[in-house]
Length: 78
Image (cartoon, rainbow, N blue to C red; front, side, top):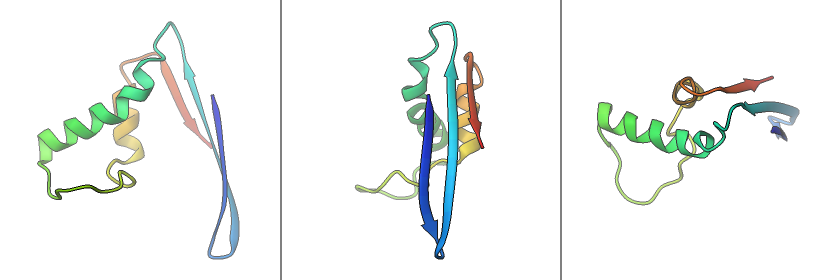
């Protein structure tokens, strides 16, 4: 899968592309990994905020990537 995101920041046009490649039927781990990473983070560090909130910014790129490390999944951002 390829995801291409375009936008502007400070009036400068930006483009980011990410590729996700799953091998040997490891695809189902992809949608589960962010949730597992977030639960792992909450268990290890506790939950500081309560109530409804946007999920943007709750996890880092490296935290999600670490959850995918045990599967035959390549996550590449260019």
